[in-house]
Structure formats: structure tokens, C-alpha cells
Length: 166
Image (cartoon, rainbow, N blue to C red; front, side, top):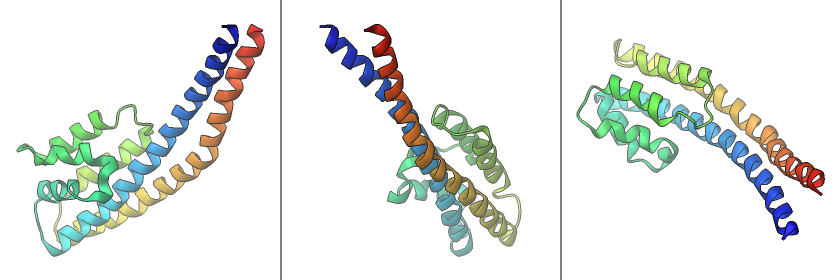
């Protein structure tokens, strides 16, 4: 019975490490999706001149945005798209591993949309696509390096507790 308990402690440590690693991977996926969303939005502005709510709702039906689909589904509701954007950032991405700088960057992108002419919006989208791309690249690198570390530390922590218990 004691052996089963020790194995469960090791597995619990591995689970905690794996969960922390998955939060890093989730952050990278969200940032990459927002990078692609900025490009998608710029294309929609350039060629269709559709309202922002329609562009975001249409993006929600695309397969490439599955990691932010709950956020994009908010735009199918009939309310102010700016409020939907702010609410979505606040509610849909809490506890998803995003850093304050990530939320601030996405928020700044959303705040600047729809406030200038077409050329200004395209420049805004391209600028934030580049910045989001840099954030996503850093997040992917962090997920590769720290993800393995977190998993290993979780297993090691479980082993240390197991050794202390013996």
C-alpha cells in the first residue's frame, strides 16, 4: 500500500510539472493565433472593408483560430465589438498562462482598430502582427526550454518527497 502511495506522489509531481509546461504551450498558441488574426484582419480590411465585428466573427469560423475560438465567438453576439474585445481578453484568457505584457499588447491592438482610415488600420495591423510575432516566437522558445524543465522538476519534486517519506 505504501508503494502505491509513493508512486502516486511521483505521478502527482509529474502532473504538476506537465500542467505548468502546458500553460507555456497554451500561451505560445494563443499569441500565434493573435498574430495570424492580425494578418487576417488586415486582409479583411484591405479587400472587404467589413466591420470589425464581422471580421472577428468570420475568423471564429476558420480552423486556424481554434485556440482563440471562444474569444472570437463573442463577436457573433449583437453588442459593441470593442466591449466584446475587452471582455474577451479579460474573461477568456485569465489563467491561460498569458503574461501582463501579452494582454497589454493584445489590448492595444484592439483599441487601435477602427479608429483611423483604411491605410492607418492596415499599418496598425501590420505593426502589431510583427510585435505579436516576436512575442509568439519568444513564447515558443520559452515553452521548449522551460516546458522540459518544469516536467523534470515536477518528477524530481515527487521523487524527493517520496525519498523523504521512506
